[in-house]
Image (cartoon, rainbow, N blue to C red; front, side, top):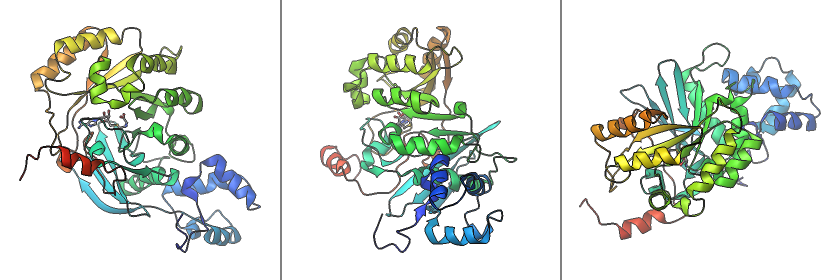
Length: 372
Ligand code: SAH
């Protein structure tokens, strides 16, 4: 925390899950159940002014004003797509900016949440990767994205539910910010938080194998894995993390994640890149690879961004690929591209931040410039 901030001594209540909030109140000489009350105000009703929390006594409210705060990132841009998707650019206390996207569909509303400022992984087809990495988000900064969206959309978990699903699929690799992501997901799942079921919170990972194994013990939300290739050679190129955790180990962890529960499946994301991973042979290899894995496949049309060498597969190729998987009996859906007119589609989230890895500068120096 910055020592010069006037509020430096205050605890940001958004950084705590219910258990920690209970401990916080008990340490203040209060009853533990205050945690549930305060969480209900903050997340259930979007109230962050302690004075408006009318079921807390005057003394407690005054105390909270002195030693606690609810620190929210500021909304610096709020864009609506023609298709109803909405993207917020949020400025954090240190000036970095991150993005959060809401995607309404028939019967559900999905919020796509970021876990890091930038990303450390260097997937070749992702625009966040191009931006480099700055830091992990704190628990409060992760849950504040849900709060800001909930507030803007008028979400009330008890009656008007606008956010029915959360996907940890925004900027960053959630399993490289493990503790904060788990703590924030606990608030999403909490009855006094956002009240979402584990089925409706999905964590997407490029495949940090040991963390997938831990996640199963700690908070077994729905799991999505960015596969994108049916063999190690190609996956090494697209998702360099594969050199550390190759496909065999990754799929073993996925099988164990689901365990004996025959209703559960892991979602495998597969971005279709024209001429790279979209042939019939790739589809067949993918089918063979996933034999015996309780899998669903999510085909994602590639979303282009400036200076990328990749192209989206033509519609006919996507349909063939889809049909081959489908005929082999794998539950497959093609994800509709949403919000690309506001750069809110998968892989297009960029935010605004300082790149500590210097990746941006390096890639500018080595890449042929296509524009003057
Ligand atoms: N790091 C996590 C979370 C990011 S989720 C992960 O890798 O799963 C974002 C999803 O969008 C991932 O499946 C990612 O591979 C995919 N993606 C990245 N860039 C994309 C692009 N340009 N077009 C379509 N999908 C992309």
